[in-house]
Picture 1: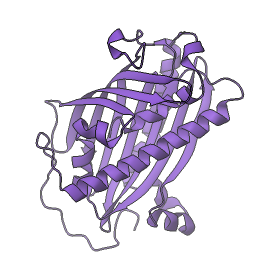
Picture 2 (picture 1 turned 90 degrees about the vertical axis):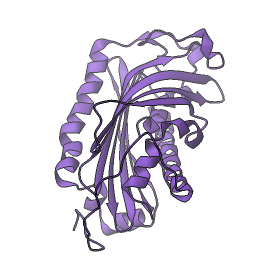
Picture 3 (picture 1 turned 45 degrees about the horizontal axis):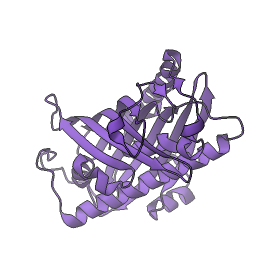
Amino acid sequence: MNTLPLACGLVLTATLHAAVLPVQHLDKKTAQEFDTYVSQWESGPHAGYVKDRHMWIDAQNPARRAEFDALKPIVECRTEANIPGGHIHHFFGTFRIPGVNLDTVLRTVENYSRYPEYFQPDVLRSVAELLPDSTPEDQHFKIDMDLASSTAWVDIALHGGYDAHYRRLDHYHLTTVSRSLFIQEYRDAHHLGWGTFPEGNDHGLLWRTYTSWHIRERDGGVDLEVNSFSLTRSVPLGLGWFSAKKARESVEKMVTRTRDAIQRNKREGERVPQVETSIEAKPARPKGTGPEA
């Protein structure tokens, strides 16, 4: 579930025309401010989930929880803000999938070779390597991926490398964290062989990404929540509302396609031979109990 988050960072392709944008340099201080924002989230909400296993939906009112249990995805904006030299997009999404378990989720999201199928047309190519330091409790991947985004005005393609960890906290709880190692914009979305702009010296449509999923198995299904962070060039004055709208739509699409891919995997009974995700038998737990109980 590393690059599922990446569509969010392409929102400016629908806001600005790359052909008329000047090339912009990513300033080191801008990247550091993005990293600081992410670090504050890691030490706050993310650390809270790792410690207590509580998810955002647990603290919501009964009406909101009923909406969630009725399988309606929830997507909210956490931050849409210009910073010196750039713009931070932070969106949150949560949803429930009945009839699946954590192993089904892992078999789906670690099957990177099928991402172009699961997330078409946004993912053009996806290749992943399971790194030697991986363990059954912490699967560590290095991913190389080509992404695309098309609007009525312009087509964009990006080449990126990503580092992803899938950590099982216990038999019923999982976290994933993915961060970009580099992102390069192709000079021509229809001729990838023409090469890319130098990293950090392009149109600024997507400079950095960070994505974290919290996942738990509960009552015959799985609850998922995602926090998607991306860094782009600054959004022009007056277009912030449109950028937020497109970012929300991107996360909604990501949530829907992730859910559909997991459900499809369950129906197919698919396995990923190069990744061992099974663990010892789970201890029995009465129905209806969980971390929120």
